[in-house]
Length: 514
Image (cartoon, rainbow, N blue to C red):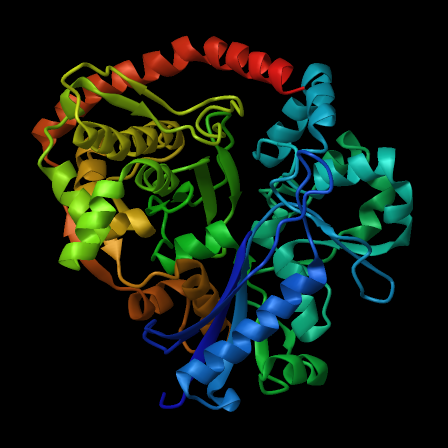
């Protein structure tokens, strides 16, 4: 397998990362480039589709150059990308307009109307995914039908981000099961639900929806034009790929039923695999990239972002100490958290700096410190931030376990790099944490799909056995777990008692800011 590499493309919400992997899953090189979020009006969030493709092409060239390999050495390519939203192309294959991203809120009034008339419940009972304003074509296309019908008339196909990148590479119009399962598929058939299209009023636009393929199938080959733009070899096979949450779960090693993963990054991404579709209002469900597997998902709006905020606003002392000692500032923070007792001397943090979407939906939720006393120290607040994210993780696990149980979790993201934080999460949840080596799990999941598509490995399990490695294992201290269960009860009561206060505070600020 000398001179054999795979390219995983991860097109996220704010950055594109293209990573070269060897057949053992080692990250050889990476190219990355930021992409912008366009806000034409308050609450709207769009992407320039051409900018996204340009960022992909530049990042691919950068990754190949950094790897020091020939383009021909890349034997297969696949994608991982942000899900939901709507990426429309016209009859010439060019963007009809800017893509509408998953963060977009323009369809909020339709969500309210559908909640009142029962449409949301009907749709959820079909697809198992709770609609929100940016959740995909099922809600965004009805907004266009009501407000900009000319957009739909000019369009040939509605794509997801993955599909747009794949189309630019291959010229093929199609989608993958995980992406389309975000509120559009019947999970039993893993194909579009005509009943769902009827409920959301899109029967006449059924022709816009592209064919659905499995993530590990070959979608096409790199065209001459795409090769010129990216530096790839023309004719390189491209596998279908998957929604980034599915790719991330795969890249962390989750293939079999009851495998679970958490990514403690900007957001808290919590996923568990099942071997049958299981619809429950406690969580959302989607197809996995692995055949005959599904994903239970419960995703918090923020996770490590809470620490980023606290460090930015309150940790000047640690930054100064870091500059003097040449020790990483997060190592200094970790030491202070480790030296602070469990429960943070009575201080609790609610980690809702951007509202919350799971396991409860409340965009007006806000971050809070509770239990401050004259004796409280900054280190107590730091410990409370770590514990607040762990409590939110337990809250999401509690929702997920209404559908599937699990004893261990593959942990990734920036938070997993802290052994202190990993131990707090293990203690709080009572789960064994297995930290996966590497950092680009979405891109690795894409590379795994490419390797399986090319027959390098028999199936996804064999590919994971060869391409995913665990760097460390941290067991929960069950005595601490008992303490955290008591703290968790208070955490849940705080959320319940503060929801009305959040709404009143939001309304008050809206009036003052008008």
